[in-house]
Picture 1 (spheres, rainbow, N blue to C red):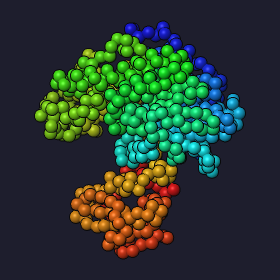
Picture 2: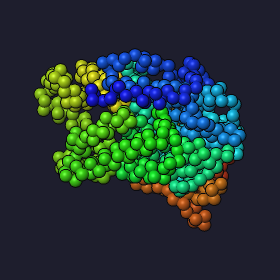
Picture 3: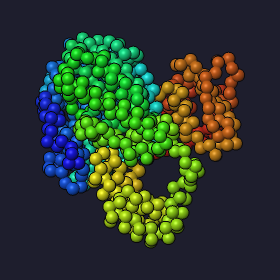
Length: 604
């Protein structure tokens, strides 16, 4: 850590540059008075770094916690510190274009109000989503309330809607659960608790909304004009998100880098879970941006962190970001082909000194360790080629055998404490984890593991690692907090295609209970003019579009998509035309299991 250039304060100067005014107090509440965002809770970061935090992560948290309205360049403003992400506002002829309206409608509304307080009550005349992650579209209704979106173009990269909603359906429950650990929003905000997530502070917990795009960006070089503001786009699919784009405001000489280049190493695979990203293509799109927009900007900004001013500084920034993802990819593949496994590569791979000492590629959000494992996973999957790992016992069975082999619980606990006292926290955690899995009621083991997790968290430079360790310690001590953020809002449901709605049912079929079932249901959607046939057979629910003239199934429902949403939400068949045996629908849904935070399809 002593090698890092803490004397370099340029990031602090840039993070403060253009400051206009802050939200005071920096607390946002919902309509019921529940606090959904509290940036003032991070006031303790003004102090010197304590021994319960990594100095590098503490520095990053100090920067990311800065809050307020900032001028990026003439006519371009950002609100930072009111959610995990930034909201950017570009002034047009008649109003203001909003880029990435945060996670929650409440924080987005507060950000827009702060802008209007200082820049006047300009109407929103355009909305742009840089990519398909929830912290970049969830607050849409905070800037365009219902009834105000008419005539307002909503721009997004092609494929945005499919990817934006599918992530919240197919594996949404598991991802939401992991996000609690990754962002640490349940932890106390304190020097020994949550101090940020590297990419920002944490996630807001308000109302997630979605206004579907009206304009698709389908190719690099596409130019659109919104409220007399020219915008030139670069598509970057498969980088930080499956659907993502950079874009230039040529008349403002300002370049938006979405989330492709921020002031940290990003994730190739997030700890909350996602599809593994392509670090090779990520590097290539950053290189393309350097060439495509060369000489046409004086400032670059992103949807997290602070801008970079000066054309040459931006080129240097993008070049190092490009080199980071290319180096991780290529060196992981080199070592993989030399026979090393993911964990072995993660232990051996180091960045070049020039990158290692550059603040904006430090592992505050992604980490070199879990990113190299993700690259290995992308190419070779979960299996490391060692036959001993091909058919191991599951965690509880494996743990019981380890503890028995160690001589029983008491000897295992004593040995784990020896390793912890000797400073080998990693192996102490491994032993204690086996002990807890072997006997979840062992209070001494759980307390000792929590203490080890505290130490690992306090030493972590990576924000999500710290939050994972500390949240795990909290649950070991106090039990699981099952309350999760519910992303299954009406607008998310309406944005799902019919095929995705039906997939969401298929994922929730309790297969073993349905092994012996054989039934068919037709859905005739009058607003789509299509017949979807659902077949439950051998415990698998499949669906396909069939011609209208096909012989009907045992039950046919003739309805609209909104009515289908009502059926899925349990509203019954009132007002819906049915042909055949309605009991078939009840039989079908009797096999559907519900997962917290609830069935993802809700009534519009």
